[in-house]
Image (cartoon, rainbow, N blue to C red; front, top):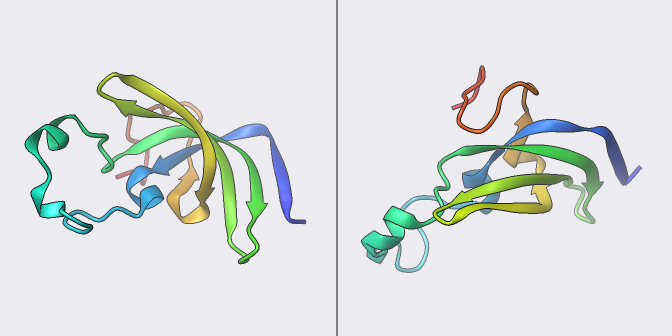
Length: 106
């Protein structure tokens, strides 16, 4: 099977850093980022709570989760639904929310 819905949706933690493959100090101009961007840009070094709706398999064999979550920004949370590599999220206990750290969360 190349796709499978998850019903009911499953609570997960999304690692924003792993999701966008961002590594501190890399990329064009990483050493020249203005202070305002550091102060008000999206913080990638965090886990956010989300819900996994389905699994999809890519044509490369990789499993991807269809996941909904909110990205905290300086102007409020931005709700998104997107494909997330299985390496960028993990199950979460339903009672834990953003800002709480569950066992094994860092």
